[in-house]
Image 1 (spheres, rainbow, N blue to C red):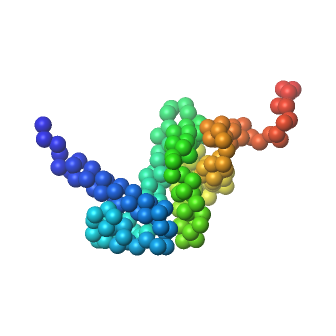
Image 2 (cartoon, helix red, strand yellow):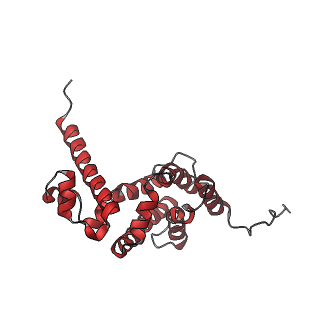
Image 3 (tube, rainbow, N blue to C red):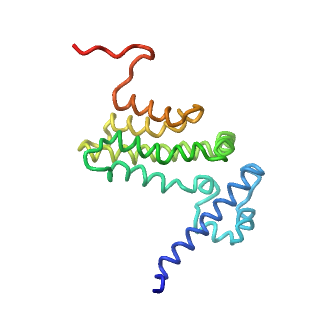
Length: 199
């Protein structure tokens, strides 16, 4: 049976996009963000600069090439969770499934250093996370039937999105993620204090 041309075309497009993003990250890590041009990236990926701009809005977007996917996956984790599963538990599972592989990636430290040391990338990342917070907060609010300006929904979204920053320096990433979600699910208790006994 012949493979549909649309499927082939989409896969080729995705492969080109990934090749451009991979070439960009390699050059950024080797030379530094400001020392790499769009022309350099196009040459390294063996495409034209026009092709680069067909896939990415600019240099910053090349660094955060999975931004749109991450945002839609966060929203889907809430909206498409299993029947009976709480929002916090769905987000816990999503964080474990997506953040732990990122935390273990061999380029994670170099990538973090690149972003932290480049003001334009730090600003882009902050804007990106603000947008993710708004989208996730809105999805949570829709699920519980409150307005998009609900503070509790915004706080939960923000805490969830801070988990990578909060846990990346911990030796046991899984335990750290679980600990943060335990606080979100059950509330904060002072460290070392035994749980209050039932009345």
